[in-house]
Image 1 (tube, rainbow, N blue to C red):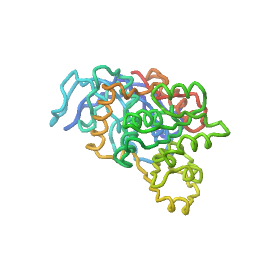
Image 2 (cartoon, rainbow, N blue to C red):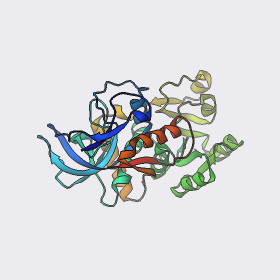
Image 3 (cartoon, one colour):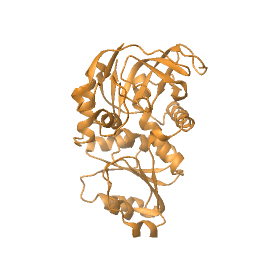
Length: 332
């Protein structure tokens, strides 16, 4: 099979494209013919070595995929040949990555793809959709009528947070970097989309949240959070979610935090159990079928251009070029 892989960690240029053996599904695994595979910032960090993980070379990167079941290993029962499926959490803990024509996936990590959803959409929404669902529901127990704030409203996680929070009956505030991105946020129901370059950004937030007492859930997607500002905008007993910024060491305003009875939640999507992730996937599939969840595809590349795609992701994640809305998806 053709695959994108690395023989060592480093810059995007270390990614090679060529022939590797087609995996044989082991017990409990399903062989999937990959139709689409998405890229996440985590993939960049693993490929570069910034996140140190034991890797067996040649290593195929990638967490997310969507495709069709073509073969089974022993002790599998949930799917049949020809079923369309999607998954995340590949490329971790010894699991095979998704940037290949075929992937052997543990059955517990696979979910059925809604009939009306394209493989590209399914792959684009995998990790970010599960991340948003875990944060909003498992961790902070979002309630209808609460106010949710998310930085980067048209980013991969940001657009998922906005849509899932609206589906749960919340009011949503999102920051973006352009008028076009403001309109995109509004198109899926975001109540207040603010250009983060506006000098009166915080005044707009305070005016919007005045009747609610502030922000109830702050979903931080940025690598370097500004906690003094965030905590000042929070409502009494609000909750802050942190799921990015491994190297971040911001100053923590202890006093303003505790006098508001605030709570802070940190989580990594890949720590969630198969059962927890399946519950999220079931919820996402239901929301898609109801027309309340539409993964955002920002740019597609052929699988052979995986190195270019990784560089493009890095430019937007680390260099903050702002040229990407939604997810990057590779097509074998």
